[in-house]
Length: 166
View (spheres, rainbow, N blue to C red):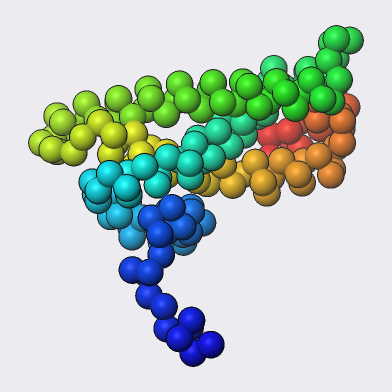
């Protein structure tokens, strides 16, 4: 039992270490961004799933905040299941496009000021920077659903005005 309590971070697999860094990026981003400098192939591969999760969740949070999402249930062809599928697919596409676009922008911007970092590192930096937006999908969106219910996806109603803006 005492042996288990004395395990260090070197005992963690790269996969587990990167999954633990997902919530850590909100509390201690410097250590997570410093760890992105590691170019070991196993370490780079271990980042892929946590990054996919962050990018997809941030994309879903972004598309659910659009005015288009606010009027989906006004269309008779849409129901709650189709809204969830729409958020999943559109969020994935939106997140992937933003991930690559902002990764390119950061890569070229840092090249202009003399950085020697690669495109992969810059993309992954953008991906981990999306953690607060991804967290909003888990924290703010359920609160909005609890307050306004299905009216969240309809025009008009109590979620218009200050509630929608907040």
